[in-house]
Image (cartoon, rainbow, N blue to C red; front, side, top):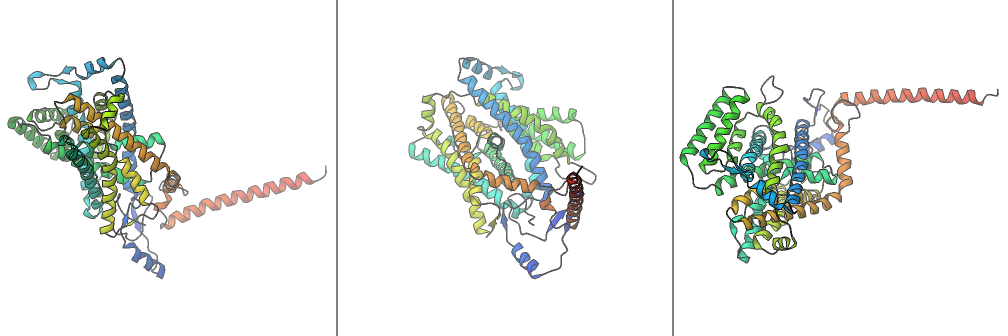
Length: 501
């Protein structure tokens, strides 16, 4: 059995299965010609192998929350489009541009601005916790396992940027939007899966989730490096001092939301006024949380806080950002411009072509040069379909679009329309590709979830556990005894029924 982490490239070791308490046991079968051959074969690296049980449980829990948030995000985006393309359009613009906040603190912002800089800081706070967990307790802690998602995500950002740059260089367009098509929206992608009724095997879902985490990391770096305006060093110094205090209080095990929430708001306000994008404050605080468990802890502080904050992020912050950012006019002329203007065409092709080719190509090349083999239950067509699904870029793409073309309202709206169009095309392409393999996925998911021995652990994780087979034997023996009893009763009833009265 493989012990690979999500999408990782790791040598297969001796079979291990979780016992009833979730611990691992190493099979102790005597060496034979078959086991020796299997051991030799086990040194091969596998791409997208089955997840270890604890990682599978974590991934499934995380994706359930992301899926719910993705559906709400989809609803908010549709509501914004309807609101902005009806006679109520003026009211949409009025609400979106309504200013609120203390001007004395430099925070007299429009609702759209509050959503982009304020609410998305919560989203990036959760992203920071996810990244920290991956770095210290997840796949990214092992360089070998991290190679695949990191290379795939990096290629999945470089290729869209290159597509955009080539199109705009040859057509005389603006290069400012090169980063717009580089981001993947995991929540929106999972919402598409929920809508089309396709459940991916856990290995593919884990690959998509880890890919999105690494994608978020690079997006954060892009925002921090390329979209930082003139710096206010006094405010930046105050934000850094606040982050140091935040870190110190965490290390002293100080508890209480009434301590951290006001401090976080102060750090966010200072970061906003410093010229560095305010969402960076959320990322920094998320990365400071401890995401490893100590003895006696059921959850680490980072996991606990993420569990509490994620519903606010996925259920309110991101949908509200979509409501105030996705409302663009979608007329025949506007959609025609999306496919004729170099900036918008670069975004569309970057998402649809660049993302797919980049992620698939990066994964294939990594496997090729590391001599890794694909999980025998999957095909490269499955990876291509997931790569197409990763072309759905929404939340971060819309944010970068606003930052890239700030001050040009017309081009900003056109780029937003391009993000919507590209994401829609990517979703339709992925839907077709995934539906072609839906029966295979259903069979794999069913096999992953089967628990015939009623132990609470999927049977695929217990095939080398003698107790698993003893439990199955007991169950089958009880069933056999019950059927023998019924056979005797049925035979007796027939015999009595055949006797003459």
